[in-house]
Length: 267
Image 1: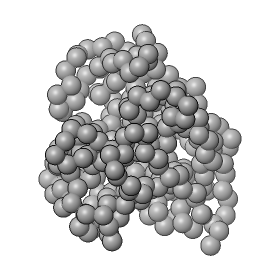
Image 2: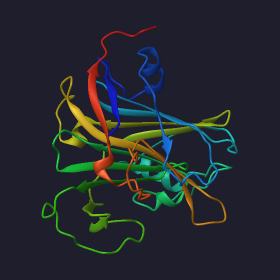
Image 3: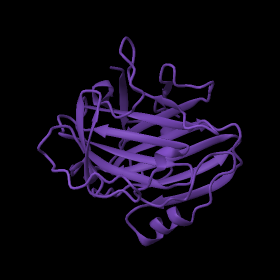
């Protein structure tokens, strides 16, 4: 299990996340390709994860050598405006992505993911966002009996509660769970920049977790291989010395995130 220190800042982080993380020198976490699942790809991806008074925020920088620049666009899944932005967004030239709308099969596209499990939680929470801004959000029960499956349908838009088995682990996906997250995407100079903000209440919290609290999770990237069904996969999962199942939903391999207070900006 990889171990990272995650900065807890004494400010809000919903807006201008990347600028604030640079000021406080929030450390980056470089994603690694899953063994034997790079298919010749060598793109660089780094994630900056932290928190503030208002919630948790991810700032991600991904190398996209063939993509054309695009100005910042902002999305969410809880307002008419945010949902319309997902449905009407134009895909980025040079990347595989469709304006699918909420709760869709974004994992078939160029896609970026965040999975987070708070301390001792029976659930982890997922956000999967494609390059066009469409988002699939959900929570996953780690114990059988917490949720009862209501459907086996996995057509888009996804809904209901679906049980699945990955390796020896039974996971129950709650696609009816709704996040209050907001996110924005920009492409500039062959790099894609994603900022994702999640309020603490999405994790059932009224305020930020205490210092030295340990959470778990991963940041992932999916790169489709054109003309095939194959995907190059990057993540923070720890596959060292283990049999590789090329799937991200393996909570036993999640990284450890330890919250550390960062009181003053470094520059």
